Amino acid sequence: MLEPALIQQLARQLYEARKTRTPLRHFSKQHPGMTIEDGYAIQREWVKLEQADGRVIKGRKIGLTSRAMQISSQITEPDYAPLMDDMFFETGSDLPFDRFIAPRVEVELAFILGKPLKGPGLTMFDVLAATEYVTPAVEIIDSRIEQFDRDTKVMRKVFDTISDFAANAGIVLGGRPVRPDALDLRWVGAMLFKNGVIEETGLAAAVLNHPATGVAWLGNKIAPYGEQLNAGDVVLAGSFTRPTAAERGDTFHVDYGPLGAIAFRFA
Image (cartoon, rainbow, N blue to C red; front, side, top):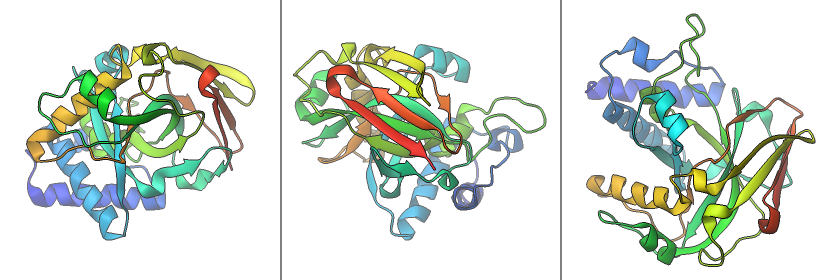
């Protein structure tokens, strides 16, 4: 484990990097002994800095839910991070490109909880019973820590990603919300269009076979820290498409079929 003072120092670097849009070198290269627990400790210290500025946690995100992403990151389970109130954007709006460093877009479902969920022992069925509704969502991911090292081009480690809010930078909710028992959520599909050209398609079953499985995993994972998922929380269940890079001026449209659509532009 890294020393507490160093964890606070690295959290401060991430806090500043987000504000100044200045990417950092890999923490894992600077500190080869870094662990996953160190990554979450840095993340928690960064959250404290945001809260000191008046920011509020509105939910959580789950990342690295697909088998392919876990293999590429050399881990065997997903990761998670908080969703801060200033990360939410309206569908149909212009997203300020200057808020991001190297934004990418992912297609997801969001669970809005009507009841609290506290582990351990949570199951997918507990999640469905506690969910008020499920709605289409798009996550904007970003790299306050470089995705690829500027010199060696080596990809960052999972410790870096976890430290970096699990890469979360923005959320767009939209489409048609549905009760979790209104349809088989595994078969929710989406088509992602960038500037009118289809870039990605996917099914929600790619998220651990059922997107509610990840929410249960998260509730159980945070329980040892005395934490839980609360009523009203927005929980991003994980992407079921590959990330699509965005530049200023790009327009995105995500068609969820019967669940409607989300659209926005980077301005």
